[in-house]
Length: 228
Figure 1 (cartoon, helix red, strand yellow):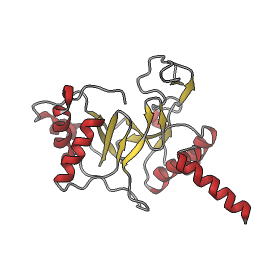
Figure 2: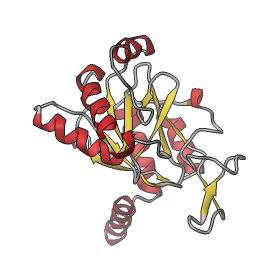
Figure 3: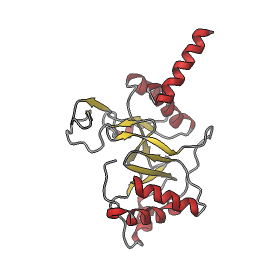
Figure 4: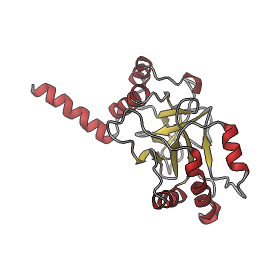
């Protein structure tokens, strides 16, 4: 009994620290409970600029999203199969967790962190129901129901201006999910999915895009580009 309790406590500590056990658990939750297709990111390699002490494990020495992008396997390999997910994170327990966006999976709209905080405040005041929100030290991403690029184009066509700092993660895109640790810092839930939810509820992109465009436009510098 003591051994069983000891193993459970050790597992709980790993989950709280966001360690390898937490990554596997999160990947399995996304893939099996929520049916979100996931895959491991390329990850980080030791070394790199002294300021960071890390570099992307991909061949690009100037990678702007170190660690948090697909490489091998490629994006098309994203899966909801529990056996595949276990195999990936058993062999690479510290691999970043990536969501393949679009199709039947969630899409997302991301913007600089400060603008994102302003957008959330505005949406909350409007009484808007939001789904999960992901944040890094520089960016914030609101998960939304799947949308097509044609539908998104129609929404944006009528805007006077769409800041270049807005990024749209639709079909063929990806988004790092918690508890990923990427070169640009940890990925966390700003608004976490409700505990025990069968599948997180997602708003339509139409419901949030006006607030995101406005927040990015009014941000200092017009919402300048920042590395994800």
